[in-house]
Length: 425
Picture 1 (spheres, rainbow, N blue to C red):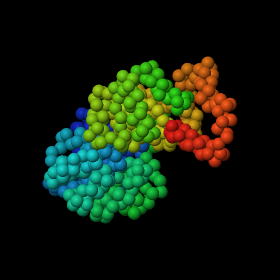
Picture 2 (picture 1 turned 120 degrees about the vertical axis):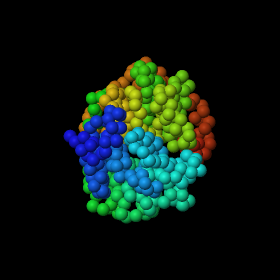
Picture 3 (picture 1 turned 90 degrees about the vertical axis):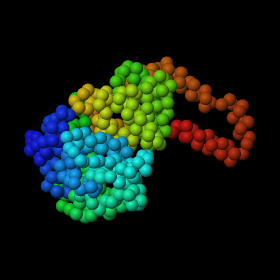
Picture 4 (picture 1 turned 135 degrees about the horizontal axis):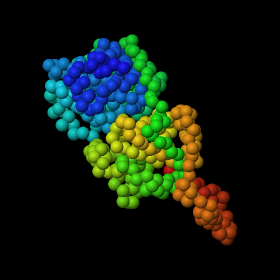
């Protein structure tokens, strides 16, 4: 395997890499860096956790001309958190470099603060599409000087509906730019984007390590929606995680679970799209510093999240595609550490579980916690009896209500059914 110096990375950056314990390039770095340094357009298909960020950051830093005050490199990301993380990574690599400036541009920040920063020499801009377009319309950023464009997490851009904005942004750059596209999957829309804007791109695909790596123990617990919260609390008490990320399907469910954890005396924060940027940043800072033990998050908010010391990941709601499962469990067991990923599965989730099993080529053993995740026989009979009592009405009442018109009765039944559906969500 080649080292970073042999790949073309200068000794100052190599010294920084060594100080961080990074000695050998990952497969995606080994294959991508030389191509980018040669000026080729690159399409890289790689999962989260393969080291793809440094695959484009290192060659970009090699090519920056500090004597030119223009924006020379633009990195587009789907989320604020990923923009922050990439910016942080770039700043680490700049430790032994002088004169290079990088700026993160994303929504939720003070616009005036960004405007002041943009008036200075910013060689690298890491941005989310919405806020960048805002600056383009204001005339506060000029992308005609861009020499290198990176579109990171392209498949997530697609899922979040950002491709039209990406189109608009690319039109602000010159066709002579070098373009790099990184994505875990390559749907048709991403392939079409590449054909429109890239010139004879080199396609690089790096297979992710088998998801079921030895460092990550995967557990599936059978339960019901009604018992999920109690099951999670039981597991937390049993596992005593150092740091844990708990994934929920929606913002509402994330908030509700966070409130429940706090009510039970746990140090918890929530991370989802409804939070102001300042609160999201504070939540991440507290979690990174281990001041909070639990982070309850949605998939989008936690995209690209990389925190050392995460010992457990809980899928409170099962992910509905294989890529999300890979992304989620990859938050633990990082940097060679041990990790545990627990997925709570209700009966309606079995189709997604089978899909994940097929996608990662592994069969899960489904476990139960009697009396907790599922009722024991006595509890089950008690619960069933209570349900029957709630739904069964006295005979006299049924006769009285039957005197009303059938239309009126149908209407009442319809209303009751609708309310039940609302509650179940």
